[in-house]
Length: 487
Image (cartoon, rainbow, N blue to C red):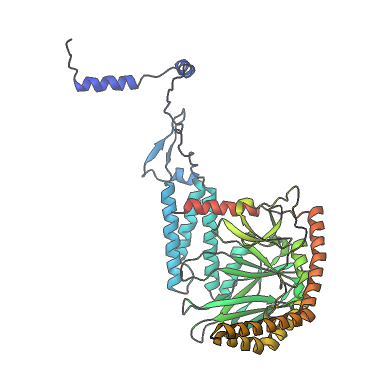
């Protein structure tokens, strides 16, 4: 058989001609029926490819200096391709690193040009059909702006906070003093919610901090429904951004108390108090809100938190109403306190704003017990019981100290046995004294909690709390967005 040599140019021309032959539609149908696979390459996405991204009008109108993509069709339009998702992820990470570094390097607000770039990245994510990533980055941007507002001089700080959260400023100022409580006061009105972003005026050390903060209403503590909003993870060296708040059920004078720790002597805490109508509490605060009772012995305050909840604070999970109490910004899991007193570990997927068809309350309420240190007691029952326990501990302090020393100095099995028996006798005496004094008071408070728990069950069986917006889905969206932007 004779081989014929074909010039390479002719071969390429033949292949090109063969590839340009159009396959009639009927032939495609026939091939499909015959079990053959005919691949059509047009404007359709190949199998497994990402969904086409929406192109914003602004991108279409800008210059054509970058690569253009032509779409097939009778009226083909050239549009500018959007940045790849990897580029947007990298841009977001680079910007947050720069912002964190800027906040660590000085006490000034974050650079506005970096915040503008972050806004532009959010817009690009939205245009790229990435709503979850855009929502996550938008919330991160809000935290930077709130941080920046807190770092401004007092006069400008209030205006900047209201620009981000609305409401009006009712109090602002600066308090000084470290390693001891410092206070400021304002008047709260019924049906209003108040939030404060306490912030150290300067940072002289990474150990500088606001150790604790609490709203007190001496004349009616049960009237204050306290909450905290924490945005969780921050860059090393930056304190957690926290809003301290309370919704008031009646007109009361509020005393805010904090304890500061810092190096030097000229530092202090700046504060600005915002007021919102209760029904208009910003969703930015509701998203990570953590309700707090005045103390673990305040039955009246506890009952109001469940039957007249702070907006957005009640969700449903594990078949019962729950209040997330440790909801980290970037965590899939959180701790939640159920209406029957249990502490649950729940995922964001398990949370819902819709009540379950059948509630699954426990038969008895679980309580935490009353505080034993008067510093953390605020209700009448709490103060009375904490004072009792503190007095009892004081009476037995020297006796426990003696038997502890006796146990520490025991050198053989006989002296150790004697020390252990002495310790047991003191322990028994302590328990007997508690059973005669403090424990009956705690038991009486538990009976009050049982009665209040029945009211909570009846309330949710008759009129479950409904939400004006889907907080649970918003939390899931942030989690998905955080994963999309994760490296």
